[in-house]
Amino acid sequence: MKNIMLTTSSLLGRVCDIAGWLGAILFLLIALLMVGQSVGRAFGIAMVGGDEITGWMNASAGFVALAYTFRQGGLIRMEMLLDKVRPEQKAIVELVALSVGTLWCSYMAAAMSYFVYQNFVAHERSTGLISIPMWPIQIPTCFGMLLLALVFLEQWIKVYSGLEPDYVVVAKQNRVTDEVSSEGV
Image (tube, rainbow, N blue to C red; front, side, top):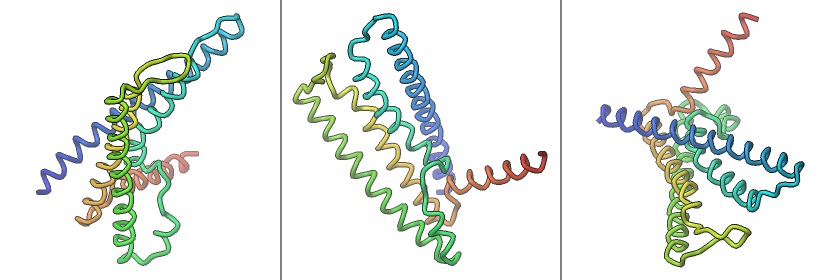
């Protein structure tokens, strides 16, 4: 059972890493597009639909990168609350928080999937200057929510099994790295 969990965790970790890189690339493309629009505007060149594309890419980038960010401890956690509870209660509080997160992200992934499906069936198109089908643009957001739900579930399983969740392991590694770095100063 432990081997299956480690393999699954490793595979999910790789998928999260790829999603993190995809989010970073999308954010870079957003920055380049915005700079391109500004430079184009200075020379009297209008980029039709640039604002719409930027908005779509922003939503996709943010959602795609959520699971990676959560595993790396980059999302807001309940540290202040967890620091106040006794060690024997910490796992229970963490399981409750991860349960709520898992349920919420699962609901959002299901709702977003249904929304994308409806837009596909109804042939929904964007209403701005560029008229394109909406469902392909919404798939990264749907994928990001599904991946985040899976990561929340994975972390719940780890805490339930008595293991430390990835975001705690990474936070400890970062603290050690920071302490070593500050000693060299």
